Image 1 (tube, helix red, strand yellow):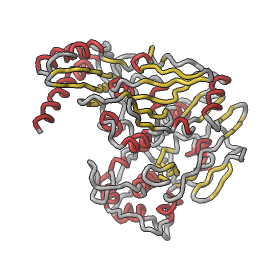
Image 2 (tube, one colour):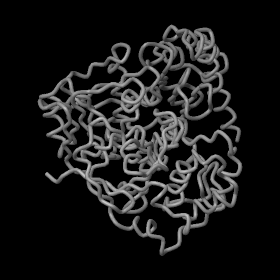
Image 3 (cartoon, one colour):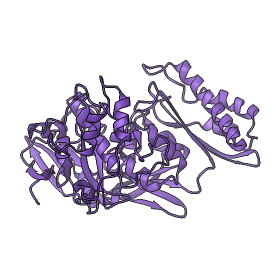
Image 4 (cartoon, helix red, strand yellow):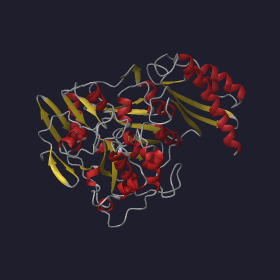
Length: 474
């Protein structure tokens, strides 16, 4: 096994003697790369953003921005990383740095390197175009900066800098780097004071580790686990990283189902699906920030069992199932039967989620409604996903997934029954909306009251009906 090392700004540096719970942020700062800063330590501010080389969608390599505060340094073994220092210098500014300076996008400067890295990732995105919502004439998607916060400059000059960027010149080193394949994941072993950080070489090895070390913590993007490490000081005796295992990177569109690997990042999933699942396309922009989505996975979101994970309501509405694997074989479990209690599921201690399966064909009328205190990058108070088939004015099938209203994500079974085989009329919808208000016995907590949640549930179905009629008239 090759000694663990990371290539940072073109320089290889060993990490074999680094404590296993060291974040990429802390390690980089220890290397003197202090542009990478800690603001929140939970992936909300983007001050720690860095670039990593990942297998590309529209080119052999994509330069992807992630939160260094959440990534264990071990997860970067064998990988290529760039910080703001590696993009340009005071004598030779990178185009992104230049535009931030001339447009007045930096004041105190604390957040600036993180903005520069997120902006550079979008600058180098090879399939940039001006056709999407919120895309500038230069093709820049302003949501690429949704995970970066600025406390003093204000966002207009930062947006101006993003919109002023042209295409990377052909001789740009990082533009040229996209034409070569990203580094393959490597098997990793870090040991420190009786603690281990392991990256298995294969799926079979990962399953054996799950069998042999039932108390080990398995992570993919570490967007949830990183918060536990930073904020709560959790230190597992063994952490096993499975995010880049090839078997978890699949995305297969068959005649009867779409299969999505549990380790595929949400950004990769979205770009590779290319809008084929409209309900997922509605979910993705509202799921945390681009920085988080560049690392987070469906497997991780479902594996935590959180009742406020945004993917679960959508997958419930899509009728999805999860494929659970162990050394003894595989089994497929409908997601509607997967959750058993608060952060609990039917997944056994020796099993891992391999993939998510979405049956085809898809329902014709879909919508995802997320209610939160902030429009983007926030935990939902209520999340509702709808998938209905309406033919000749009658509801033929209905699936409704709910999040944030019970101890687990749930299907609104009684509301579905009130809709099926009924006319898609205001009378039917209003009656069903009253039932939906009580699904899941909406709870009181710091995000919303039970009364607010109940009202929101009822209004969500009325909104779906109104939107569907408006769409039919358009």
